[in-house]
Length: 214
Image 1 (spheres, rainbow, N blue to C red):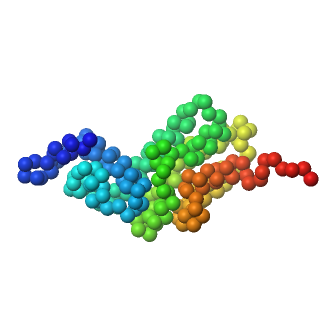
Image 2 (image 1 turned 90 degrees about the vertical axis):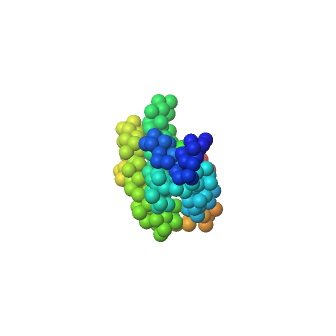
Image 3 (image 1 turned 180 degrees about the horizontal axis):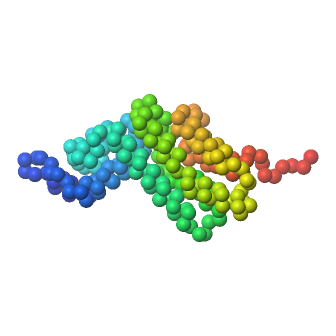
């Protein structure tokens, strides 16, 4: 798959300069490789690990990303863009009701990212504060479609007329708590499990639907 990058080595062992298209293709592969390394090793993987996975030298990788912090920052942005695409797919799905869309969009995530251990994100705050700040900003920017659906649900009478900032703050603050602490690791819960429980409570409350008559 990466033979074209290896073919860029000349007879003196020096790496050539990639054209724009080749560089962009490698950049996308680097982002996906970063996700795979994070899935297997968390934030402990090295640029040597990346080079081995991609089948290229570190020098080739450094033609695309300046350092590991830049790699994390750019990959976070890449993941955010993929999540937005997943959200749009939900918005465009006419087979879903408004409530179903709200539930789906609040946990919208490409299938390939479902196994990532998002519980490890808390480590960013100390080691890579710039990236952690970027993640928080992206969380803030992720609400446009959800707010539109909540308003639609209120208008349709399928969602209680609760101030949207309250709903947004409850869900967002809970996710931030999951990402900023070891609460899920301590509880033995995966991030996906915790988000699903949170969504269930937000949409349906904590009371049992069927209560015994006294």
